[in-house]
Length: 187
Image (cartoon, rainbow, N blue to C red; front, side, top):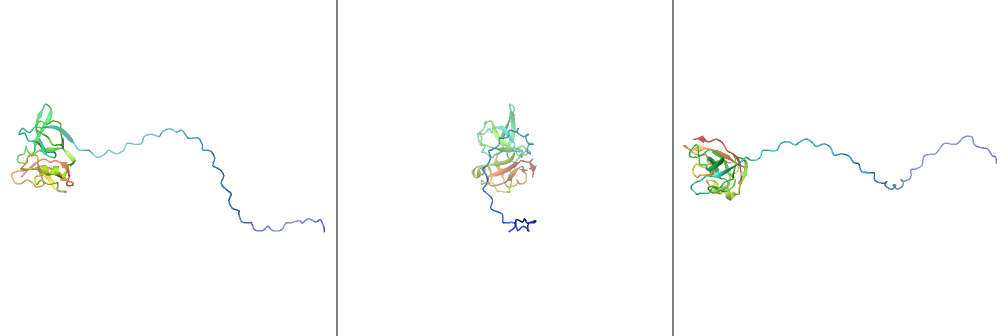
């Protein structure tokens, strides 16, 4: 044998398969928490819907009778800067000019009675039966008017000849009236 070196290498063979990945290393320590400043306040949101309008008044009935919650009321006289009211009645122009519904039952002379002049007004079906001429809950979708027969009551029947049509609102459900009184129209 001789000690002869080969002058060139032969061709390389194909690359072998890659081996499986080794296990993951341990997680490093958590870095320090940042100390940034609070961002600027965002813009104001849109204005929400208007709430119901409410006026505080005094029950000015002189006959000793009370008015139930939901009664249609008309301005009477102003006493010491406070508005007063009586039950509206659609048999005269003045009596049919209701400006809202009493939110609570009241007795004569009772002050601070909230009168709702617009927006959703909710009572129980039993409470509505006390102030509707047909003694029932509201009829959804029906318009309600100042009663021509019972002071403070409302009715879903348009007043007839010689009376005044003063709409108080539209029934949204059997317990909610959307109050929106309108000026009376003579018939």
